[in-house]
Length: 472
Image 1 (cartoon, one colour):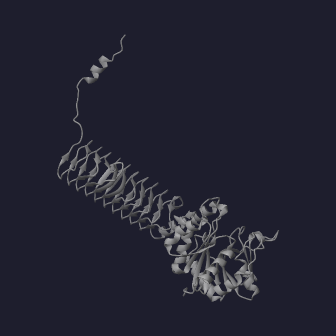
Image 2 (image 1 turned 90 degrees about the vertical axis):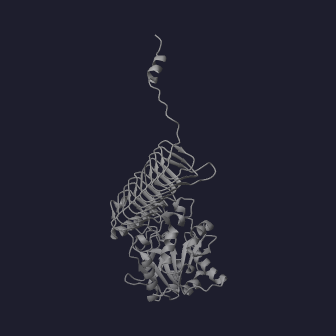
Image 3 (image 1 turned 135 degrees about the vertical axis):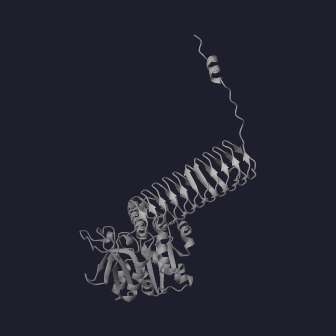
């Protein structure tokens, strides 16, 4: 289907008072990104960004800043006086800006994050097929309370007579079970010609976009509705509880998608998996794992319980033991992490490398087969292949003003409890004696010791006890 004649308008100007939050409603996050970014992502699958317009109002500049990298346009609704008023600003944008409006407009809500591209494409196709002036995407939930109701001309018809908001239902009238999702297609000329006829004489004192339906019907124009396959995908998030319901649906959907691709997820309801995460087949994810952001995990990996992996890339056959935290890290094939390793941003762990119990890395490049198995901090370091870092070793990378780099060559042995004070270079195959404080470069194939000589005093304990024996 050619959708080039469609523009998309996303309503994102509201405050969302029922959330009881100081933040803009559309910037609240589920599934790892804001409600609005989810809607924009769906919109971008069916048209190009220059044909998408976000209506912004409450904290407009903050909303603009959060999503402007997507390339969409913006229309300001400085005073929020309802959904009809929002579309009046869109009309003014085209009228005063000299930009020709598209033949049809698809109107979306910025707080409906589960909407699927397939549903939007089907809605546009239905709208064109029915030659409608207005097409409503509806749904039939188990409880329609709180939503506007779609009144069809009769139970078998696709034609709609009107939409009645919940607040405007007459006392004792439960209304239709079919709800208005707030997602529409319009023939733009028909919409724009009726926007100025809207009235705010209603329970909310606002200009309802839904009133356009009755105005068009009165003109003899065609208004139709089509029911969405899934209720969840058209539900908005008016409260935190509703938002968390949508979050749970989205994350469980992501988990089922991965399982369909060959990933084993034990107890998927306990996992937190963002919608953008990718995992290769035959990888096993244990309960209570979090996979966040743009994380990519290869094949035949195992991610053990209570690990949190964010915006990181793991190769194939990687084992992440319990309780590891990875943030903007890269891990090579067959590497072994944890338990309780912490890989901070800039960590690049090589193939078959090992990071063990309570090892922390930051801005480190570790070579193939190198190991740091216990209680170490490695920051701002370049570590070669086949290096062994003993328990408790640290790179001292910060002098209180600047960060400095430690460079460790291939095959180096760093003894336990060593302190490497950067800037520092340790040559290939060098040995650092346990307990050393190394402040000068170490040549290749050398042994470096940086500790005081041990002194042993035989009999010292007995002598001390005799001298300190209490008097009778």
